[in-house]
Amino acid sequence: MIRTLATGCFMSFAVLAAGHAQAADKVGVASCDDFLTKYETCISSKVPAAQQATFKNQFDQTRKAWSDMAKNASAKPALEASCKQTMDQMKTALQAYGCSF
Image (cartoon, rainbow, N blue to C red; front, side):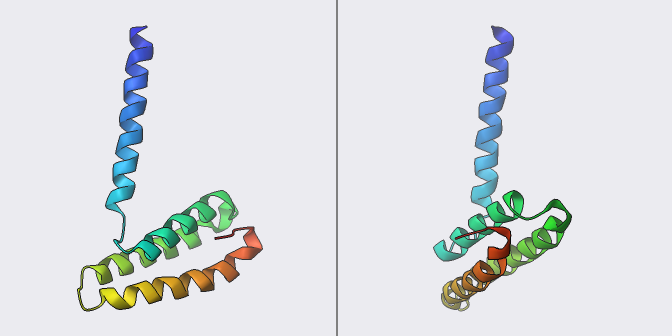
């Protein structure tokens, strides 16, 4: 009983920690965060393992660039349009893997 309770508490903590990490990785622009979530899901669930590293690298670079732009008040307004444009481009590129978003 105690072991089950401890395991349950640990799993709850792990879920909360994972949720916090995802929230910390948010860009802060709804269209960007929506795209990044869908893109990451596509990479991890549809792209063959041999190609995932390339896509993951691109994902990380995109998230960093957008996060940096979001910190700049004068660049932030253009970010929404950039995110939407990137989503449109990647939708087409990732259809071959069965991704849809």
